[in-house]
Length: 289
Image (cartoon, one colour):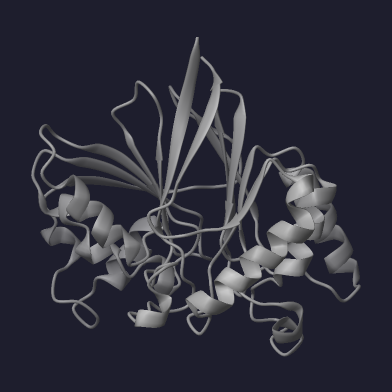
């Protein structure tokens, strides 16, 4: 019997939301992805950019109490801005587990409390009505009824996870903030070896491609990748479906449409699917249940 996992993009923009007419085709909300697993009521969310607000609005009217898990790659603004505006957090009877990799001595609850302190937002984390458990996700594999999840450290400006979800024998990898180094160094060689092993044969890879190579050369160390680098690595590591995300806020729809056409013309022969992620886009990943 076959089944299918649904992956939906609620936010694909990096750095800052951009509510500009020239960005609306690909979307102006920052990073947020939802995974729906067949036969499971649990909502699975990755990152809490401004796209999370629209996800919350879309499910607000659903009957019954919500049960969800939220995985946050790191606490930069563009990955947490939507959290205080996620309406299901304000409803009694809803339950959420939130997972964040450690940030030095700061754990999950410390990070969320700081983000929602009255210095930055009028509603504190203690005022949320839903039950919320905060877990500092240390390295290793976490096992659940319908999926397993692990991560490796990204090459970013702070401690940042690259999550890998194992669902129905398929591997879905989410790496919205990850700089793939071009310059040779001991660190770069070691990191790329680990990264290649981590993504090898992945069914779905959603990866940072904020810059082109010319832009990247002016932004080395900013924590983001050039699309040319990730496409080559994903091809060599036999990734099936590659979705490029974390679009720069200054990348217009015209630029991104032309870029996608170029990438598909040159590289689609190597993938089952290669595309730039769009807000509202859904991926159906089928497997034997």
